[in-house]
Image (spheres, rainbow, N blue to C red):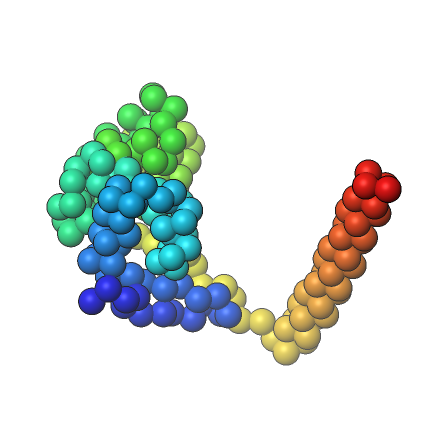
Length: 176
């Protein structure tokens, strides 16, 4: 199946999950077509940086890495983190070396290592989630938050229109 596997609604934000075959098809098209990662990502509905991570993992480990990603153990986390810090490696470089494509995990592991050292990193539970459930807001809190967001939204729209007007005026000055 070459289409997204599922689409999950996370409080108004949608996260699409793609099959491994779909990701591999996008990676292969990148190499076969000569198109940029950005072009391929748009065509496949992927985020460009996610595709770059898959491409790097594929370059370092071949197509098997898409189907059999590395098993995350405390030793794996430590080895990846130490290498990433020592080499000041980008996420793409980490993906190429280790075949691991989860940016948020890499970021979290580096942060934990810097703050708590090896013991902090080793103490993480496998599969621990970084996201916590937000507390339930009362109706008054929800109404207040909605008003804040509406005000912020209005201010952002005003700024956007002002910047468009300014850009238009600058364009008129340079062309006239």
